[in-house]
Amino acid sequence: MRKRYFILFAIAILMFPELLFAEIDTLWTRNYWEGAIESILETSGDGFIFTGANGGWDGIIEVTKVDSIGEILWSKNYGDYNYSAGLGIIRANDDYLITGWCGNSVWWASDLFLIEINCVGDSLWAYIYGSDSTDEEAHCIIPTQDGGYIISGYTNASPSSSNDIDNIVFGDNILLLKTDSIGNLKWVRIYGGEGDEYGESVVQTDDGGYLVVGYGDYASMLLVDSLGNEITHINDGMEYYSVIKSIDGDYVAAGAKWHGEYYTLYIAKVDRELNLLDWK
Image (tube, rainbow, N blue to C red; front, side, top):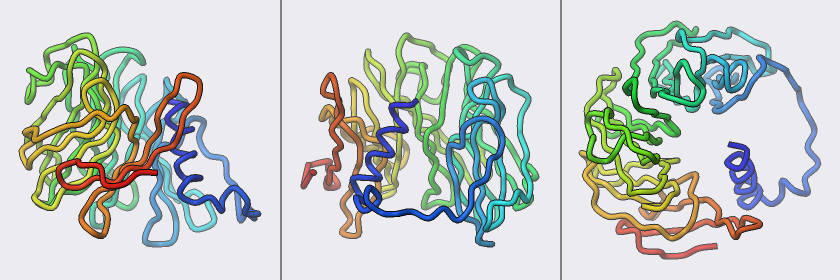
């Protein structure tokens, strides 16, 4: 986890090198609950809403909303689990969607959850996806063209158990999970080989499909259609943690490559068939 944070920080420095030399004046600093903040959004009222784990690895899902100077407006936790964390938060009209993982063991059989809350933190609905015998975790959630949502992450269920998530194997695999606008499960797809695979970020393609980036032995980039059927994949040896669609319709992924003793930062641009167009 620390490695992931370091890479994301380094990517930010690579994209905005002026941060290394800028003199930053602190406008305000606040301490909140003990644990880790995983994702943050600016709200329509010039404040912020963020989620994470209150208490660290043995914490609970926490969501806090603050005003423009960091004063807490409300802070709430969700679920009855010994170990859980909110890893992603996005806006859903006037409400918010939070996803992450939850379970009663820090090392085994965690499930993926999705919660919608309103502007004052009241839960509107909540779903848990997974089984007692498998481990699931969400890393990224985005809205889709049909009004639903797509979640990327990983599971230790096998690829043959797609739409079931109930067939455990030794090794993690890329997980894609599609829901409608109120969290009803539409489909699940699992991709991978014999090694470990992780889906870190996802973007929807112009034709309604999805491009997933991450890392592992099977794929660092994975292209699927609107129903999650695999079109193609590549593994260029990189670890990708973020992907966006560029203004010209191609895709840009940011990540790093491990050289045994150090990482080099890497940004790649690919076309709609995952052909490499440019890299830095």
